[in-house]
Image (tube, rainbow, N blue to C red; front, side, top):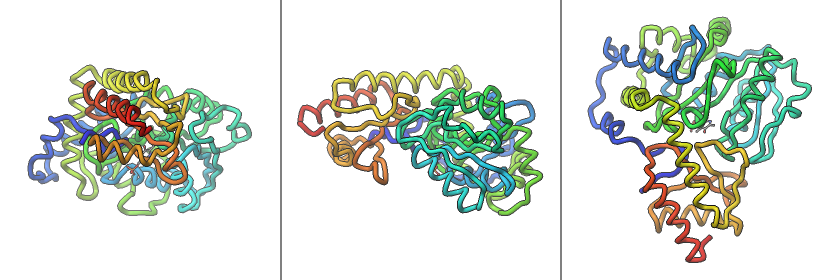
Length: 355
Ligand SMILES: *Cc1c(COP(=O)(O)O)cnc(C)c1O
């Protein structure tokens, strides 16, 4: 099967090979070394400010989102949540569950967030945003958001789980306090690990906030991470794969080169399907995903036929958008030929009157 979903995605053969062994014991200086290197490379790739830290949680991306809501924010925060789809909605649900004081700014599906929507929220203390709202494919205007947070002294927390590597992120330029990412999106490693990068200000907050959980305690994660360890048994193999992949990126021109690759796959796909009966859902797409609205409807059927008759996975949407749109991921180990197999399959379906 060719996998064009938004994660887990296809991995490089060298990364797959790492998982082809028994899991090594991890309370060792060698594994600590790997972890410290993972942290260092992550800080470098995100251009984190001096004295930032990164921790790796054995949890999917949502685990890191939840731990940030629990450990970085507190009862006295007034929080803005940008909600333009299912991932924005997830932050809303987390804030509700953990009884945070928040206001949501809703964006219509596929629409950009504009400055006017933040009017009147200048006295808030924190802002939660999914840099790329993966359900609609929108890449938010981070320059505008970062500027708003900077002038109003608002703590900027960025879920970059699907934007990391695919889209330009510069933690220093954004002035972001927290950036969250995960193993199974553009990093293209098996699922199981998500990571959180903290600015010194965010580290201080974690230290001052009460500890209200054990497994997702960021105070414990930060403390153990100093010696390259985790409080509990981590997804060791996934962390070893992450190390291989980070080295690979570093040795083949760095994160910029990797982003160019993803952007060119996305561009090739978008320009090749212009003659097909699809509408692009967003004018502000991330490089990671193209969200398509079939003009004649039937998104679910298209996803099913691609799977059953062409051995290609694309990503269905959920909820009320399930039969209205579907998504093509451009992340992971996708070759030019793979990309054209997908494009050819879509043209073939069009010839057969199936679009
Ligand atoms: C994939 C994703 C997540 C996390 O999803 P998990 O299934 O918990 O890994 C969170 N936010 C965004 C924007 C994502 O794309």
